[in-house]
Length: 127
Image (cartoon, rainbow, N blue to C red; front, side, top):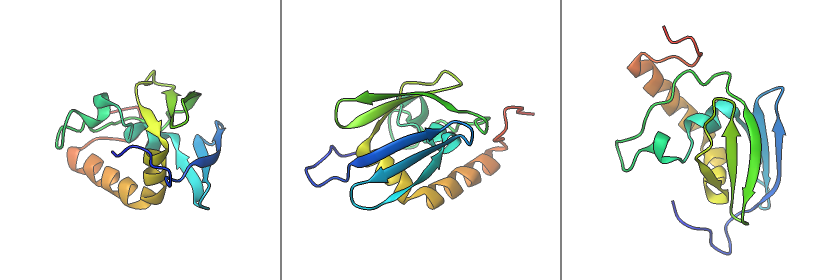
């Protein structure tokens, strides 16, 4: 993940909709949309989720009902999201949030395919 450059899109608005478990984001270049808390949780940029290199990603299961309980600004480049399952070690840079928003459909499909291949489940009752 590259650092922010002077021409990197910056968010103009970030709103949490806790009832619908969605984070609404608008960027200064016109891109805007919503990301589910589940999507943000399973694509956390933390080492706990991403591993320490390619192929070391840890598939997250049972996150369908997770919510964001806190959003903490980190300087002028990122936010730290705290999730209802206690996860709070990922720093979501503006570039990473932009990437997640721009590539949401493909990333979500990839997650669902990995989940199905592993026999995992989106709901908390992993049986």
